[in-house]
Length: 376
Image (cartoon, rainbow, N blue to C red; front, side, top):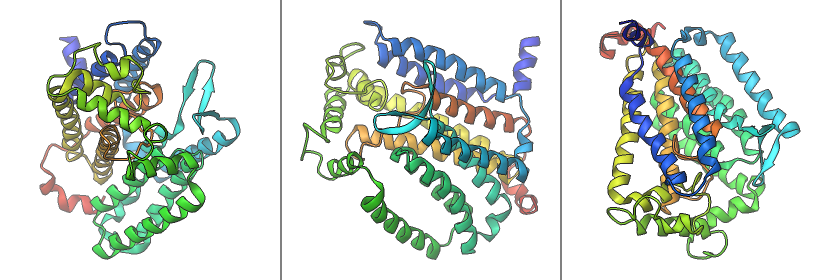
């Protein structure tokens, strides 16, 4: 009885939780396939345990304090200082100065930055969503996202910067941007891309985009990873080759199969039907995030949940897209599956905050509360 009361007080969305667990398991199996000895497998077990602990701890917290402007401003300034500190104390990995190193443990603040961006925009649009037709609100919200975007892009971390932009764009669209302003955003985006191509992108980033447009132009160079990942996905066919029999990853043809290309390694071993199950589980996670968002107590909780769903969807779509050759290789990980502690902590922290908000959610239908939200 005591355990049951404890679980009830936690108010966890167990359908969401148990949809995420098999995805974690799929990542572990793909890393190790129960053969050989994978040090990443052992480390990932520890990161999963830590991340799940963070998830449950945050589910006990009342996050209504995040509605306060001074709290959000402090979080924003702290994050910007943390990202700026990377240029002084950060270590460089694969050409990107994106990590703090603490002994054998590395932490990537850009994962935390995505959650902070969601919180900032949720706070900003809580009162201003009815005034989104005014251009200044788009520009001011864009300024907050742009500061974070620029600090991440300069590391350079092109993939995470793209996620920041997608989160901002998605939340602006949800808040009700006009078609005229949406068109203006599109042209501004094109102009920014042109400027980034001329002055911002590193040579390896340009090569990734070129290899996306012409994937077979340099399969021994910049297009090698994308080419090998498409081979791995295709060779899985309907039923897959079986756990431990994925030749592309096991014979080292497919690089980074524990991180960036873990979906390709999974699809090779589990096939089309296994991938469908994986897609269903991710779909269930996102569906439950949105379902909880729509029961939010105020616009802040609703917008936070929607932003979190955009965060997971963009990571999932981009990672799968680059694994099957439909999108350029950006270095973005697959949520829950890829090796790494920073992204796991951010993902489960985001879900933990959502569970904390779930503790004081509304129980009536959103349509019945429309008039109440306007005054929040």
